[in-house]
Length: 96
Image 1 (cartoon, rainbow, N blue to C red):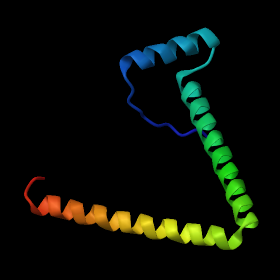
Image 2 (cartoon, helix red, strand yellow; image 1 turned 90 degrees about the vertical axis):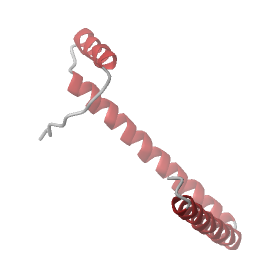
Image 3 (cartoon, rainbow, N blue to C red; image 1 turned 30 degrees about the vertical axis):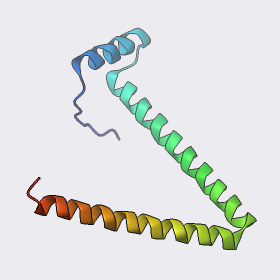
């Protein structure tokens, strides 16, 4: 079953996609459906490759991997807290 959606794109881009559809016997909808599928497939492959690399690193040095992961989480949390504090200071200074 197909679902209808509405998107906004620049007129020039629409003209190019429409010309492509006319030349290939395709449709504008088909162009965007194919593009979306390609992007999702690439994302799935990328995520799978990342999972494989993580598992390889974890298998090679489980304790070292866990220590590195925990350190990264702590640094990320500290960065998020610092960013939130700066944003609060900015808002309270009336600069926003």
